[in-house]
Length: 406
Ligand code: HEM
Image (cartoon, rainbow, N blue to C red):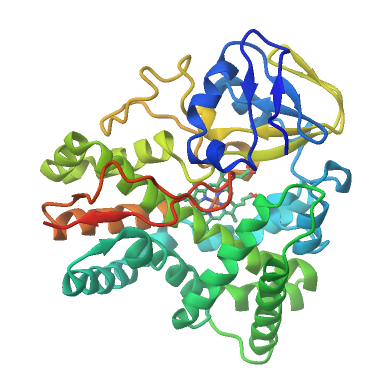
């Protein structure tokens, strides 16, 4: 695909989520977007780029004018087919969104999340023990890829030792972001989605016959007794929780450890004062968040920050750009684990604010805390080595990250 450039503003903008080099480091490309009203660029159709903090916040809070439902006309047709036609809460507007979110809210209350803490620590300790025995650490494979998928699998009530299969499915499906709209979906991605759906259709059937105390059973009950959920929505729900609940937290751990590795002074500060961990996690989320951008569609003609956006136009709502907006954060490109205040939008804003934020923060702080505690001389194995990112602009994360232990 051609570079997406526009001359509509003072500085030229390059934005192309399907370009590997752009994805490797999108941050310099955000700089011209802070200088004026949102740009409308043509990728294969018109898209608005919403990057300034105030504009991102305004769009996310305005779910009436900015819909989360993706119309089939927008160009992501193949991706939409992959996920089926039933809405998930992430891609629904009220009242459907309100109904779906209510069904799982009680499973994500701070109390329910606190109850998971001992098990999260137990899994983490097993993982870190294995690293110690092995004598080397590849953060992604050894810790970050494993912990979140095991936790969400257990919440869903499916065997945690199937985690490698789940991870395989979820990695393939996330790569669908990387398929240029209009191009055919690769067969392995379609196969992963079909297998995931078949697996969970089967699990749902099992819970119908023998309910347990897990989340899938609770959703099945909502489907059967209250008719609050259609069969298709039930399946979408489970797929959403599995995908949203693992890849993002994986990348918080990976991107966070990379930031610490690249800023040894900040790592030393955190070691010296572990009570800084909650603030350090917020800074990791702000500085290099797992979700670079979300997406909305203008429901009617609307002005955002001085730009007219036409009804039906898609908008990249760039959370990670907002989190580096110099008009909102002093020294936005500095990684400072004591930053306060730090009202980043890595978890979104408004009615779709991340349901799993408490769980993600808990898993991130336990995993990162355990690695720092166990390995006192942790550092980047090769600070000059080129990093390889996985194939999605929207969900930003490393393919691997080698840290030296001695
Ligand atoms: C660091 C990790 C995470 C990040 C950065 C993150 C980020 C986000 C963001 C930005 C949104 C809003 C998207 C939008 O407005 O379009 C969102 C929604 C959501 N997240 Fe997360 N998430 C994380 C972890 C989790 C976990 C662990 C779970 C579940 C176990 C989860 C479940 C969800 C769900 C279900 C939604 C949809 C909520 C709604 O539509 O009302 N997330 N997340």
